Length: 422
Ligand SMILES: Cc1ncc(COP(=O)(O)O)c(C=O)c1O
Image (cartoon, rainbow, N blue to C red):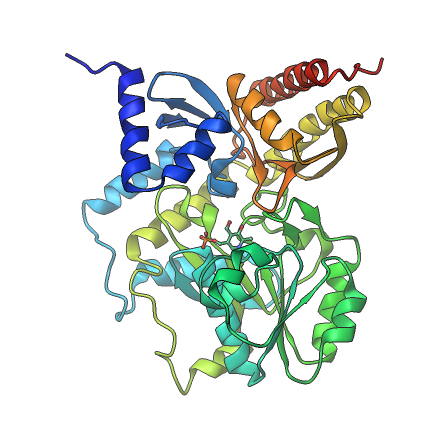
């Protein structure tokens, strides 16, 4: 006899609490996010009890090509008939093919790649390359930045809570406010190896580079012979309506890092992409940075299939179109619920709702989950709801999310005794 799905769900949560994290289970339950995913397709997931949700969280942007993309999954299945992950020491066709494709789709002179498994690892490699190549030590990063929890990347996170228990961290990191080129101009010196930035801060709360900012930073870096590292781990692969967010401002970094959506939600892979000039550093020491699983043959096959899918299905254009449809709905919400919603920050399908106070994020998350939408407040700020649905989201699904937002806000205003402004 088949087990009752509700009983099964409780068993999973009990085991998760006992063997992985009781705190996580408690937090997920109180946020209405004690969802055990089962079937996944496009922008939709079904939990093990059969409840349906539109996923606007997507592991903070892993699923640009959609949940369990069948086309890419079948390419991976076919690859498994012949290949394994490959051996990191040997050259491989799969690695060469993906690196060549990345050189083709990234802007400017970006050309050479070091592969990794995750985003933090890609940023670690970027910072190592910057120090090794420039023979300088200092790294400038932004307040509220998020670059991963690994060694060098952790030092570049702009939030103390993630760092304090592990101090002393890697020395030589200097924090500046995000969006302020003058602060970088004042901080940079002849020992600055690199400035590392996200074009749009994701975890920090969807903060978009102000116009002119990245161009000014590019200019300052060039004048000081400092490398510019752009972390496109959340913003890359069509998320913002262009293949890479930095293209909106026409700014080309010396090093770009990508991860998350490159693996299509099916196989983890990351890449640190840099100019040929920087490759000079590796000539005397080609084996100075290694990753056993980085750029596995299977990961590279998936990465290529993901890029191919994005191009074939015009996901840049679709993300921009669906972003506009969301924007219309957000504009009505801004007008109707000024006591709840202060501002919307958005580029394509990278969207942040700035609520009027900290308590609204968790309450909205719960209400949205009750209405079949997974949308979570950001790690650094509970007053901001981040919406990053798969880029394959349909018009109907966009409208479903907007209706859920409207209903949740209406209910929240009634509870808070705030009248809707007509
Ligand atoms: C902008 C950015 N950089 C780096 C990372 C770290 O990636 P990973 O968790 O794969 O190490 C993240 C993860 O959310 C991110 O959003």
